[in-house]
Structure formats: C-alpha cells, structure tokens
Image (cartoon, rainbow, N blue to C red; front, side):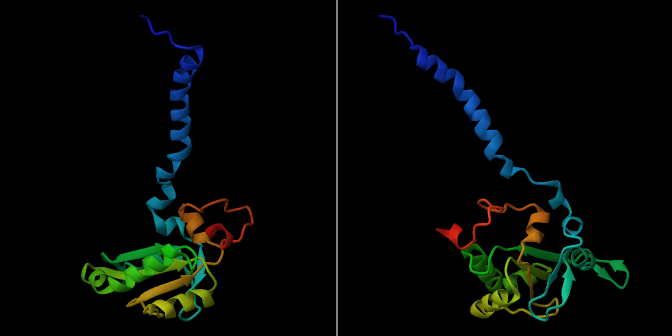
Length: 176
C-alpha cells in the first residue's frame, strides 16, 4: 500500500524552512552584540547623569576613560558598570543586592570602581539605596549610584529597551 501525501502536507513541509529562517532572523537579533558595546567609554561619552550621593553631574564616558589614569600614567584599574532598569524593578533590586553582598569579594578581585546607573529620578534611586543599605557616596571606594530617568545611557550602550519602549505606556503598567 502506497502512502500518498496530501497537497496541504507538501505545502507545509515547504513552508517550515521559511518560517524557521524568519523566526531566526527576527528573534536572534538580540544575540548580536552591537559594536557600541566594544568600547563603553566611547559609546557613553556625552551621557551626563547626576550622582545620587551628591548631585554632581558626571559624564559616564569620560569617567570610564579617566578611571585608569593616575598622574598622567595609565594603570590597569578595573571598573564595573551596571546599567540597571527602574528602581522598583526586580532585576535592578536583585543586581544591587548582589553587588552589596559581594562587594568585599569584588574588591579582592581587583574591581576598583563600581558604577551603577538606574533609570529613575534621584529621589527614587536614593530610596532604593536606603532600602537595600547600599554604601553610596561621592568617592570611588564605594558604589557610585547614578540617576538616568530617560534611560539614555542604556539606549546609547545598546541594551534592550523592553516591550514597546516608545509607545508611551507607563513602565508600571508593563509589569502586569
């Protein structure tokens, strides 16, 4: 007995590779690292954000570039830059908790400066720091927390902006 394929089955088999290629092209673009991340000091140059502890405006690109300069000589200083989400976002809270917990080990491993940029108003970022007991301050010996309400640093660095970022939907509504 010979099994005969239906015309529908033949078309489905022909369409499957097309669907796979379309899906792969559309959804794997998130796996591609943009060239802007190859040099964060360059991609973040010109992005000025206030440091939460003292309100001083800091150019992120320049701060990253100058961190390794001591008296005109470059030395191998390590900087950890964390681009967080909103102050109330679970991932941001979790990252901040982990940085706080592992701060001594990070120092032992040679991390000289920790900079954390949060997409929120300075008051919200300060409140997050208080709730999590983050050691924020104006010097490089503790965590430097920065406020970026517009999320421009993340945009310039090339991170995902989440669900419908330009639709004008409040971020709190996107959580549900």
